[in-house]
Length: 378
Image (cartoon, rainbow, N blue to C red; front, side, top):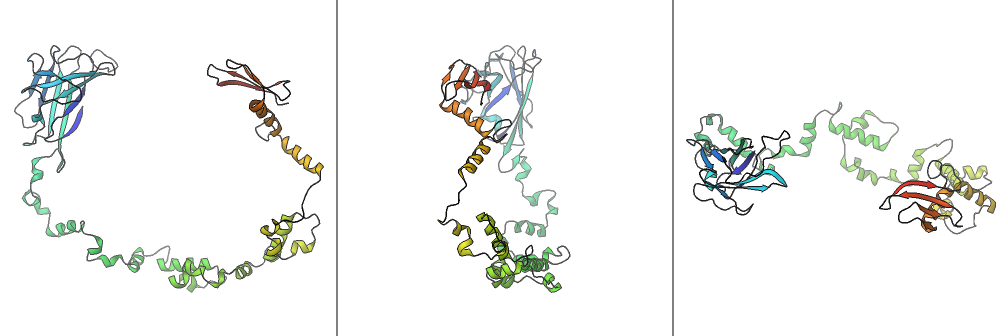
């Protein structure tokens, strides 16, 4: 076990696992109490002249009164208790005197070992002491000023100034002007064979879709006043008439002729004439909004309507493979509103409307979950 504890901490509670020497699966050894024969808890820190030990034979291991509640041990003693032999077999709580975690000298860690009782594998542990102001380990030399360290000569005044700049806002630095827009564009340098401004010029020309692009259009600089998307949105070329004109011939006819064809197709008139197909699109009479206005009813003969409905209901694989919509509706009706038998133990059966056959038969378990299903949608 290895833990990290702040130097000078008080009321430290530790948890340790003692393996069972007789277990091939690595189980924990239970039943080790403060008075267990041979129990020894030994500790040492860097700089100590030798280890210190608490033992059952010397009576220097006291019991913990309440798990998780630290109570200062009697002078020269520690506290020990098994946590829960049933839920956490082999886990124990250890409470040491506060003096073990003091911040004096070069004591950077506390090492220890629990051993002795029959069946207990000698178990080492280490507690790393840290100082939040100086980091893990906290050697005392980190308290020394840089100027007093042996390698201080490497920290020149120029390097110190560079380090100081890290704490200075960019806006107050002397080279802040280097972050201007023009300098940023120049610093990006060549971009696929041209400057970034040239790339913007190419994009501007491409967005305009002019037929006769010249090298000046492709390599020209980007002008925010005339070439930005905002400026283009206000230009006359965005007007509807010019957009339609620029699209030009479309499959042998003007765009208005194409709209006329689409209008005729949407209306589904039976007798389309060349005038309908090639006629101009009139927004007042031919738009979808205009067609949605009340007008002469468009209807199919009853026989055609019934044929379409039956074709849809009897569509092969219309819902699932091997199942038409009509068959699915019959099964759903039986389960939702048909008579049923067999509850609660099953088999559960759901009847058709005429109560003449079982549409769905389900084998269920003790909780009513369906295990097997048989259907008849004929």
